[in-house]
Length: 74
Length: 406
Image 1 (cartoon, rainbow over the protein chains, first blue to last red):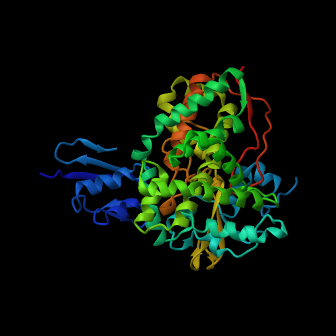
Image 2: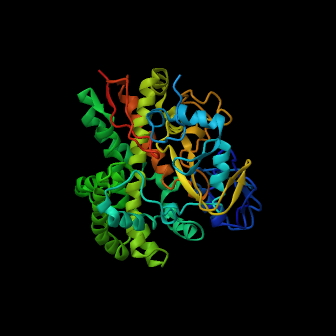
Image 3: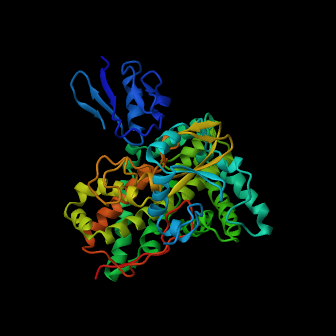
């Protein structure tokens, strides 16, 4: 069974680099301040979400397992 | 009272104390038309963040689009060399707008991301230890040539994947490439020599990595070439970019940070009491307090009315990181050097799609340098309390920084 992820963006860190939006437009969008927002954490594979999190230059993307509550990133 | 010409960006005041100079401008005219240099000078933190994040309004293709003669002026016989430099630099990732930028950045970005970069930390820590083992018994050093300059070149050589015995040669090339940010009228000669030698030196490595990819940066670019996303010229130019962008900037982080600690012995004592716990926020504060890059430029891609000012397509814009990082609207007690400051939303790496590709690498190098110095050096004493800076608009570069610990 695929994990269900809880994903959010720490806006004190997000610099609007947008690499997450490039990685998965289904999960991440830019808000009007050009910071990243999560619209639907389940819209893409967990691998894609974690790829976006690992490539965030300021580690603003926080990922947990919604099932176990375990921290997956950072 | 003497009045300061706030439009002379090369004045002794602007170079010596950019915080006072641009701070005054931030408080009096934060979106300022500089008639002397014909450009907009932007100094408020919030304005800079907004503008940098609106990349579609403010183009990064400055070198390609700015047709004005070089400033400060160059030797008249060097026009051809200048054109070579212009053509070379306009292929850098940093000079692209979308959609080309997104494609090129997509190739190189993961290599520099935090998770991937962390794997290089032990190498960096060892390189710092090597340098300090040699320096420490001397009881003092000039931070620039002894520590701040050699470390980044050593790290970049490793990231590029070139053999250690070539390090000295790469250092020679790096020294020539540093002329990119100098004002001497003869600077195009060493600069083009460095660029041409770099292309010649890197080419066989690219050929080899196309056949046998490894874990280095040249392999990443070679894979980009294989996938048809970079041409060969762009691969060579962007390998050189690693030296352009990662050398002087890191030098300045190390030297300016060391100077800040020497001038704030209380903060140094605090870091020494808990280097592992404080080195991350301390490095961020060094980046904020005396940023390696003072300012950066864009060129307006459309007409923008901004806080009542009319910016027109083609206008040159310079945003002043040094002023934004000391903006009282963004930071409490902005002129205090506080290594525990959190959050610390400095704009020393910019923001938006062009957020510094090498930021994680710079952070790693800063953290490992300041951690090692804090463990080894009880007291940083300036040999000369007066320091001098290179006359650059862009870089906050000390000319030298002799210190002692005996």
